[in-house]
Length: 336
Image (tube, rainbow, N blue to C red; front, side, top):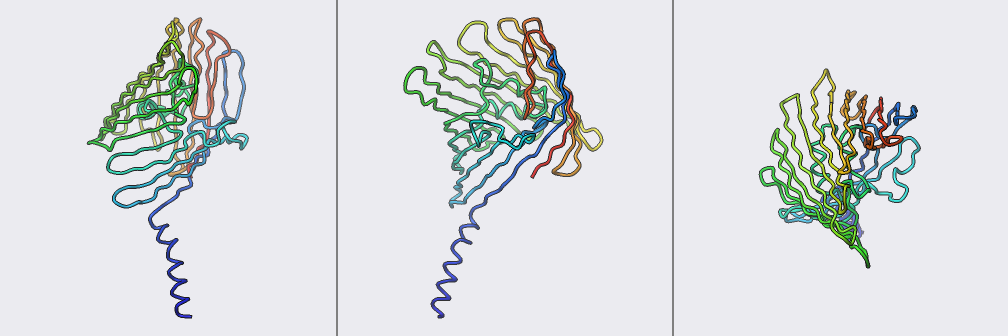
């Protein structure tokens, strides 16, 4: 009996030893807003998903492999809080799905990952790639928009060298014939105290004739309770008169217990289409996890402009060429 007791105790200790070296976290965001939308022709009041942050459910974890080496993973799925459905009809873990290793050499991840340009845009957008009227509208699936997430990607980030971090990404198009659709991305970000600076470049082979290029620069500075951020985002696909450019300049300041955000935006396409935007938002924390917010964004297109706006969970496109969209929203966000 004594031997059986000792054996049982040893077997029982094995799982607990493994647990002590690894961790898994379940997390998410629930965000919804009542919004009054105007596409320049029609007005509608809607319940929108993600007026500030895209609603999501995620799993992330690490395992200590010893010698400073760690395994890691992250699976994150977008949720449409207005219906309870997935925010994507084709991809369940549409936000991020990676596995990798991290150590003194840096971090290597494989899977669906954020691009080097996204890693620059997020810290240089005063609207936090969240509220309508910020940099999110520069990203998309059209050839003359920028790439935010990379499927089938191999990614590397260097360790931080006094705030300087480099990134390299290669996404496989997995095409047996025709243009490879491979994408190569490079980026470098510097973050040290109050200052942020970043630059990134991406190129892909989507058409037989030439390469589609994307590049961006961004900056930000914190003056205590006052922040200033700016970025310049460009998609320059092969072809005539389709180059897209977006410039954002914004500021935020503490106001009462909350924070006030404002952004100016310029969009243009090489063909002559232009759109100028303005956005303002205010977020008020009820606790560390829950906040109320309100936002307003508008965009003025020229006669051949058809630029829209995007929050983290909702897109608003203009009704036609030359029409001016706007949206006012009041919402609540909870982090868990």
